[in-house]
Every structure is written in structure tokens, then in C-alpha cells.
Amino acid sequence: MSEAEFDFDLFVIGGGSGGVRAARIAATHGAKVGLAEEYRMGGTCVIRGCVPKKYMVYASDYGHKLKEAEAYGWNIQTGVFDFRTFMQRMHDEVSRLSGLYYKGQTSASVEVFEDHAALLGPNSIHLTKTGRTVTAKKILIAVGGTPWHPSAAEMPGVELTIDSNQIFELTELPKKMVIAGGGYIAVEFAHIFAGLGVETTLIYRGDKVLRSFDEDIRDQVQAGILAAGINFITETVIERVDKSADAASPLLVTLSNGDALSADTVFLALGRKPMTDGLGLGKAGVELGAGGEIRVDDWSRTNVPSIWAVGDVTGRVELTPVALREGHAFADTEFGQTAWKMVHTDIATAVFVQPEVGTVGLTEAEAREAYGDVDIYKTEFRPMKNALNGSGERVFMKLIVKPADQKVIGVHLVGPEAGEMIQMLGICVKAGLTKQQFDETCAVHPTMAEEIVTMRTKWQPTAV
Image 1: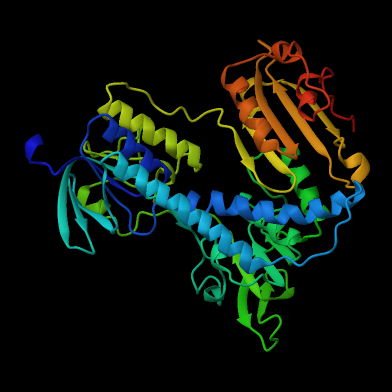
Image 2 (image 1 turned 90 degrees about the horizontal axis):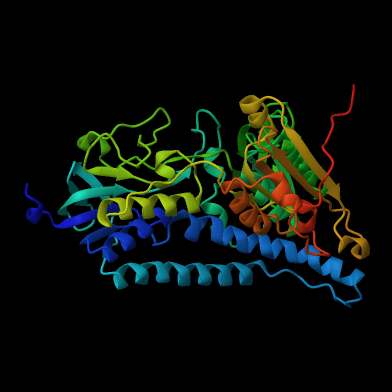
């Protein structure tokens, strides 16, 4: 088929962060672009992920702020949190953002199909609702991921639980919630619902949450879970969920350690998987990895020359900003005559527990494995505002430095607005700045962040 015979220069399957960015940028480079999204424009992050979750974090945190304000002289009369009003306003904002994503595509002359798309071959796409088949010289798959949960055989009663999509569909605030998982979704929502006054229990199969994070961060977050009043049960899993006769707590959760818990909501946050089912990848000959992810090279190319993939569906780094950059790099490289690729190292990220986590670069364990001895600087202190409000919440900061050239190769924070701080510190680590350059930077006083440039004493482990 000659180039002139294709319906599109590029067809994108998936209207999430990576897909819409790639489509819009390719269109601005002059490509004729089509995009199919079967649900709502914006993808997981905007519709049922980062954005609505962050609003729920804000709502939860306001409960703490009201109590803290009293210590500063404010006369706050106790109010009742209106969950329905909050959820309606949150969904209204999500709908507004989704509309902006749609408008951004049409304004860039991208033809949008509100339809399910599946491959018929390396250059052919079938649109399910209309039955139409379109062709494209290049195809980009950006469908993201979806929550994983066990089968009914693995966990009887799993149909009585909800996942990280359905959590945003709640119409009533639960009274007693059981959350299973130890990743960022589980710990974030444990804090959210505990902060909203829900009796919250977190179940995790391991002994410490946030696997793959720096050990000090894991310890800090674990302590924060307990301080938030969350009932935390480790080294166990949910074996089954049954209905009970108790109208107030209609679910009975049986654990592998023999305990049983009553709840009205059971939330499974057990990880995510690439959403590759029903895409027709086999018909096009696209290779998948062991976890169902689409296998790609550093340039997001699959084994099929006409097909690329970006974002969570590739199983590389499952973060919205990564998908955005992968999509942008693809569009510039293939349609803008400017070849560049996403480098998947030194990516700053945040976990919106309360207080927040911010991290970039290597963990201490990774740094020691890579370089042997490393210099560690860390501090823990009570932030200034907590001197009057009575909160026991503390701030933790850690720098990891490579001795040979004094480059800062890891920064790990726990504290209010850690996500904001780590964005700026991510620039420093990405640029390869040294500890001396951190030390030479004048502090902003009084702030929490000034501690980053005033740590002078190397940490020494306590002798056993």
C-alpha cells in the first residue's frame, strides 16, 4: 500500500496522557492524525487516577487543617463533611478537564473517534461501534493499564470488592473500610479515608509498604500510617470476602492469619496490568512481555515496524509525566524531524500520603550496589508550624552522594509539600549537581526546604 492510500499518517489508540500528547504534537507537525478513545478523553490520570485522587487528598487533609487552625487562634465550629457534595464537585471538574482534552485534539485537527479500536494488521484498525476499518501508515498504542485483582477461585467473594476505578464511583462515605495492598495507591487511599473519618484497615502481605522505595522512606511512611490511626496488619492477605447479616457492616473479610474483619467497603489495590486484551495485537504480530506488556525499544518501537507504544501499556515506568514525554518524543522523532527519546532515569516522583513523599534518583541500597561506599546526609525535625498546633508530624530528608565526584545521586523526602520540593530537586539531580553546589546555595529562611542546603554532617550508622 502506497503512502497516499492510507487514511491517516498516524492513528493513536488511547486518549490518555501519552496518546493525546503524541496525537496533538504529530498534528502540529503536519501529520493527518486519528485517535480512538472508547471511554472518556484524558485516561486514567484525569478520569480515575492522579487528578481525582489529589482532590480526595485535599479533602482529607482539610480535616487535619481545621484542628490545627484552632491552635492558631481560629474559632472553628465542628462541621460535617458532605461527601456527596465533594464527589459531585470533583466529578464536575474531571468532566471539565476531559472536555479540554477533547477540545485540544479537535483544535489541532485530530479526528477523534469515541470508539473501541482493535488492530486487524500492521496498518489496519477496526472501530467496533461503527464497524468501520481505517488504515494508517503508523500506529501508536497508548491504552494504559487497568487494576489487577484475583479471580473468584483465588479469592472467593472478590465480586464484593471494589478497585481503583470504582473507588471514585462511591456515592456514600464508608464507615469501615478494608484496603488490601502496600503500593502507593493503597497507602494513599488509606490516608485519604482515615482523614475523612473512616475506620480504615490496611492489609499487606509484606512486612513494610512501598517496596522498591528507599528503606528510610518506607520506615517513615510506615510510622505515618500508624500515626494516622490506620489499623495496619502485615504479612497476611485476604482469603475471602462474604456477605454478613450486619446491615452496618455487611461484609466479612477473612484473612490468611485466621482473623476476620467486618467492613462495609473492601478496596483491592493489588497492582495494575497493561490493558492489552481485545486490541488485536496478535493479528498484527506485536510481541508481548511476560506481564502482558507491549515490548518496545528505547524509541518506543515494537517489533512491528509500523507500530509504536507508549505509557503504562509498555510496563516501563508507570507515571503520567513519563507517558507524556514518551508520546511527545515519538511525535517529534517520527513527524517533526527532531529525534529524541525519553531517558528513564532520575525521574522525580511523589506519593501523596500524609505527609507526602518525594523521591528522585537512587535509593541507598541501589547506590551502594552501584558504587560501594556512598556518603549519606539525613535529618529529621519538627516543622516550624507544628510548634504551635500540637501536631507530632515530622519532616525527614536524605541526600545520597557519590564520593568520587560528590554528585548528589539520590534525594528522598517525607514532609508537607514534598511533591513540590522534589520537582525542583529533580532538576538538580538530573543536571548532576554536586553536594558542594548544594552547600554553596543560600538557604531561604524560615522554610523546611532550607535544610536541603544546610546538611553538613555525614550520617554514620549506629554501632551494634
